[in-house]
Image 1 (cartoon, rainbow, N blue to C red):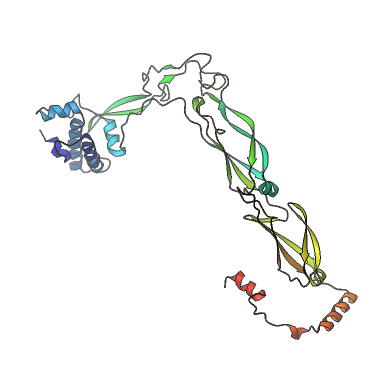
Image 2 (cartoon, one colour; image 1 turned 30 degrees about the vertical axis):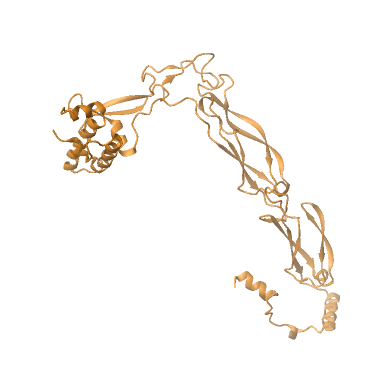
Length: 368
């Protein structure tokens, strides 16, 4: 008889954990599905036989006293499938019955909000369809006071075993019981409302408080408002994802807002005051005399509220000066007289190399 300690490569005083680790390592190398070499297969049989004895306290004790402890390949040599599973996945093959009451899943719903709601926050009513506890059976899944009974096929274990013969001897595998779906019990009189699931799908209305400062992609968590679990188990959470609709003329960038304002050439030359509509109502914008196209005017505290803060961003007004493309004779004459008074001519044109002028803005735009 081979020395099973030598076969596994462990000391005679090795602990059960050391024996298990040694077997796992060898089984991964020698299993027929991994190593088809006939020599490796024979070696795998020896390793399996050694582990079968040394992993069982009674068989190991008998072996240490000089007994056989293991009858490999015989009628009683039932090597368990759980040991193979343990070698490759670190756990036994036995699962046991699964509980009927389990936690529910989280749910996700998307809602659209406008820029006004994103800036100041709001309260919204939303309609969701999720799994709720069945009011007929209060989650038990059974009609009336009936209770689930033990499955007669698996005797409450939730799984059945099947023995097959292979080169390893008798291999035992386990699978969920088809009669009880692995629960170990059977609902003999299921609830007519939920068909034994303990929950039903239903629409309901919830109030959602949208905080000021949210933007597309932000999620609001409503604890315990998601899907109720099977068997009436605890509900998951409901996540409300924000989708912000585009505004008619305001563009959001973080907590700031941007808008384009076109003014006539004469207003840019002479200066003026323009009324604009902001999220806070009407505001006045002062256009200084000589304002150039591309000028940006900042208005503080007219942007979006910062999330979890009372402070707000800025509103940036981008000014574009509109140059008329067609003039009648009288207008053209006035412009020529104006040019003559100023001494403007084609010779007045020059290349702009000012860092604080168009040249500087051009370099910034090109990343130079």
